[in-house]
Image (tube, rainbow, N blue to C red):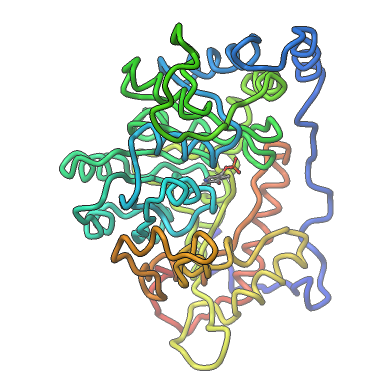
Length: 436
Ligand SMILES: *Cc1c(COP(=O)(O)O)cnc(C)c1O
């Protein structure tokens, strides 16, 4: 379909009483079946649910290591825990600064603050919504110790650029792969490129163990592995003869149980199929909407392969209130979102409500109630305008669900819905640049 043919006949939007695009229910499916049930039963039959005595967490990690081609990984209780453990293993401590993305789950920064380190936010690429290495480099100070690179929504960061910055400044790189199972960058799996890779199996991710997580130890160094392992388990040295030996420093209990490990074994077998389907669907949406004026598809990093945890486009929408420049779409984002929903296409106008640094916790610098510690150890500031690209992304993004249970027809209907609504609101009289 060419751009000009969009203007020939404008169908009546469902929100104006016209027929809906989506007339059939979206595909649904069961995430858990007999395979998970069998594994859980076996876990119970072991008569222990402790990861170090049973076989389920060990098998889950062995399978994960084989899939990812890594030597060492540690199972933990959540993705948040995985990031905290990686930070602890890397020696991130009081007063250190850690550079990360302002568009992510809160779980990315929780561990930083529990180590009494300070999150510093760098700006993003306007198309891929991932860290811009130049902004990261500009925010390095003598206190900077690590980068937490969030691979958002299944799409890898520009790892060559980030690893280059990290190497030149001797920084640890922790990959937050919570949303990016089996995502690849130039043929390498995200989570195996930096020093540590952190995964989540919470119930909303590609695979679920209810809650859970994994940390990869990419140095391949056994001492590093043991320190990482101990950091997830109260700093007990499970591999040492003298388990209850000296506790050298503080570490939390983030252990995974055998029940989670059991479910994880069965879920991991389904993972490649889930990611392949999501990848195909996400790529198809891009192909189906890329010619629409005023709509920017979800960009994939050059050399990247996305497993699309969600699909997020940007629109050149009219400003919510009053004036502003002429946008290429005559509707606001809210109007676009409502019109699309009326067509039967579920979507959300936005992602997180605002960039992380605009939460009260940062603006008022209180991680711990009644205290400004550890923020008072750093000059890092948290105010509007700090990461203008990230703020713009959250203002004009529209998020669509991509789900492995959807049918190919569901994806075609999503595309048709977006095309119908975008065509209706497209302005023929504007020559503005596309959403940037
Ligand atoms: C889900 C998520 C986390 C946290 O994982 P939990 O298992 O919920 O603790 C961290 N980072 C990102 C980007 C996430 O999406």
